[in-house]
Amino acid sequence: MRAPICISNRPWSRGRRFYGCSQLEENMCNFFHWYDKEEDNGVVEDLKDDLKDDLEMLQIKIRKFEIENKELKELVKSLKAKSVKRRNKAVFYKRLGILRTFPG
Image (cartoon, rainbow, N blue to C red; front, side, top):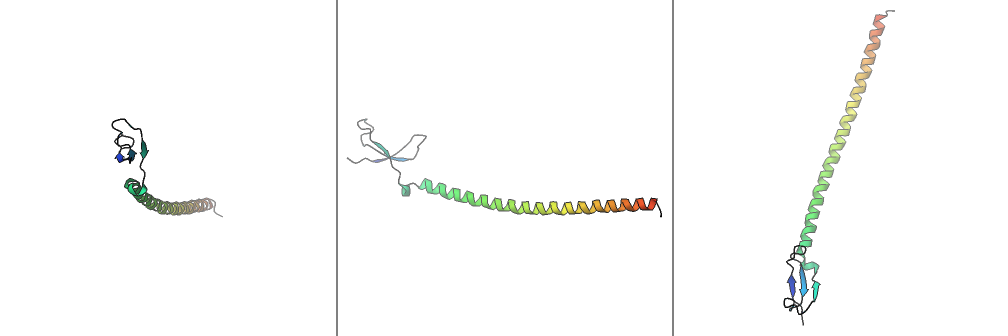
């Protein structure tokens, strides 16, 4: 006897195919086996494609963040350099002011 391919309606396996005895409904046979042919399982391929697309999008976002991070680091470096220059200038003018108060 050949078992027909059936489709599950259970919430946890909805749409999944299985072999079931042709007399399963009459409770005369308990034969059951999942039918898992990869070429017939288009859902898996669709999920793989979706994951590949998601991975590409995440890689693009990572590249954007890396560029933004590099630009921010350069900005911080530039601002630190300006701050040091201003501090050095203030110290220099302060010394000049001290020298002016004590002519010599």
